[in-house]
Amino acid sequence: MNEQDLREALQDAMTDAVPPRTVTADAALSRAQRVQRVRRANILGAGVAVAVIALVAGAFTINSPHTTLNTAAGPGTTPPPTSSVEHGDRTQQKGPQNDRSVQLLDALDGMLPYPIQKATDTQTTGARIPLRTHQAQVEDWDRNTWSYQAVEPVAPAGGGIGAGRLIVEVYGPGNQIPTDSCAMARAFWGVGGDCEEVQVVGKHIGLVQHTADGRVDSLAAYRYPDGTVVYLAQSASIYQAGTAALPKPPLTDAQLVNLVLTPGFKVA
Image (cartoon, rainbow, N blue to C red; front, side, top):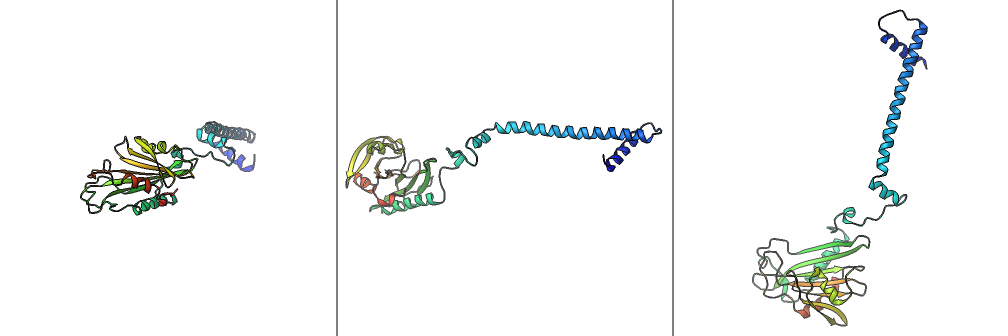
């Protein structure tokens, strides 16, 4: 006990002494020492309590799922996320993947055979939804495989009110789409329908002429040697858009199977 501790203890002892009486120096010193021991014991007890609380809290933290996940991977490593919850939105609104979907839409516009053209505002009167769109979307986080879509409302040049729709979808290498031409074609949106395999300049193309889905009338599908799959689909109407339809789909079957091979579609 230093001089300051002794002075404080003596003051406490004198203050607590009730009723007033004569106090000898030895008695005052003994009482001050007892007060100091009690004070130290209280401080020590408080420290032990804090340590116990911290230990209990630590036990719950060790068993939390987040900590267990990070620990299981080893120091300095993080297990690869496998869902959109960890990664965020599957679509990319900007960046290189989105740029590819813009490129795909430009390629779709550039291949339209006369007299088919982008539908005018008059031809798409009454539209309740955006009609001209593009999108880049991840298909598998772990494989880093992407798909790209471009949609364009189309109609004959000089035609009256009414529009159909062309859709291009491209799936990069590593996709899980069937390799058989007709199985590949029917896999588009699960439309099913009647299919035949057509050869164009030695390339095998799946052609679905009559689908079982009201959103799509017909489509062609082609797989490149590296695994990239390209779909070109069409309909005489724009599903649930509120616009008038064309009397028939915008492209012929021959145009469909030839245009699916458009080089600009291979953006993946």
